[in-house]
Length: 435
Ligand code: IMP
Image 1 (tube, rainbow, N blue to C red):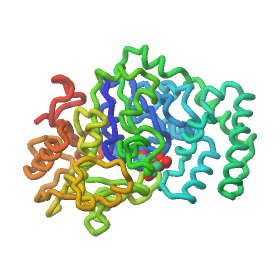
Image 2 (tube, rainbow, N blue to C red):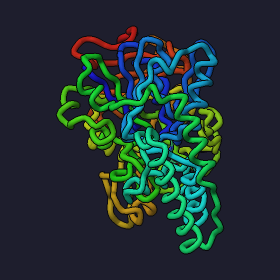
Image 3 (cartoon, rainbow, N blue to C red):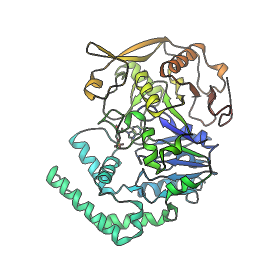
Image 4 (cartoon, rainbow, N blue to C red):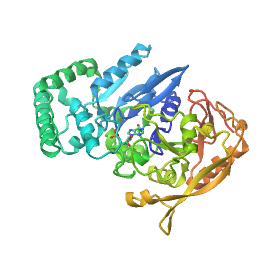
């Protein structure tokens, strides 16, 4: 049975560890949207890995990693990341497949990202993601397959640079200069390093008999269609992105399991509405205890209580079968813990997540309060060690969002987790500490 793992909040839910953990049972691991804006952190035997472009599951030597067509790939960073991981003794290039249809992120996309941020702040990662998708949908994108023909690649880059220069100068009154030769030569040098990995990955995925884990990046509320638009990333980072991002028919996923990863509280980086944000000492405490600083940019994350209205939105629209709850231990020792169960907007109560930014910005959370637990849950591996009050908290989440919390992750280390409920028809993946 194939497995899809998605972020159920605004990203940074701790997907990296979960994907790494569950990849031990899968043969193929796939990333299918976004690019180096992602930062999936994994701790293995005390060693820290942060993956931006490679599927996290590639850290297991038995897997085949796939960078599918929906990603936007910065070859410079990809080659750097591959070398870093290979430098730690893990082979990559003999197990990596890169879609020939994936679009490239080139230096001018990052220039444009910075310029657009200057003109209207979204708080992007400045990795060129928005502009790469922007040019893709304007049908001016450059794909990995274009690198096979040097002359064609050269003329595509030249056209792109002319377009970007015009946009910068005429629309934004900003100077722009980038040399075609430099961009082309550097891209071709990087291509040399990985060109044997390039293939039609959708055919590969369609034909393989191997088990597949699909690894979402960012989170549902950053999805360009169902997130907090325009404060979102530029791809479909929810389940909506699966088919287009992999090149597989929607039917392909009908038998798959869908798990959403959520923290026991909420964080977001960048701008945009965040109804349960705590701009006080409680928010600061969550940030410090949870080490809430961006894996890609190092930015402090905004912190707040768990927003169950938003989480239920993610459960419904992704068709989630269950939640993996992470970082519950950060709430250990709190006197009081709150969850948001509805929004008050003007005189109206909203139980569903509104589309309108105007409404979301005015949303006042309606909270349900829980008495905190005093015991530590850090690193526990047995359900019997979950304090009763923490279990009440978990049970409330399950009832509210309508699916079970199937797993609790209790520290960044690979082996610190607890399965709480059945996931795969009586079979759980990974070793089991079952309640
Ligand atoms: P972009 O994806 O770099 O264009 O950034 C758009 C928005 O998505 C910004 O608010 C970023 O902070 C956010 N974002 C992008 N990638 C991630 C991620 O991996 N984790 C959390 N937030 C992200």
